[in-house]
Length: 99
Image (cartoon, rainbow, N blue to C red; front, side, top):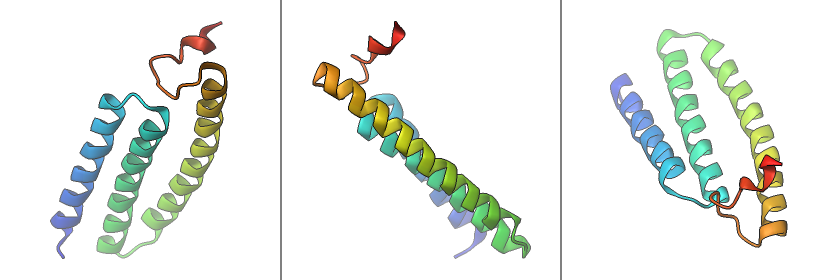
């Protein structure tokens, strides 16, 4: 596949992830949308790294995966905390943390 097909795939994945974050109100589904957006960025990094023949994009993609794993841990902890207190994982009822 050519370079533009990988970029087009990454744009489509990013758009699906952004729409998921903006439309869905469930906390777990919103985290999945963020992960989809991060993976589309990783696809772009690896694509350009391979096209230019260097490893910087692949190394940066690895660090993005590490940050994404940490983000999932913190995000799921917050969603579980809100679910335990409100019995709902909806982001609309997450105003509990304002105080």
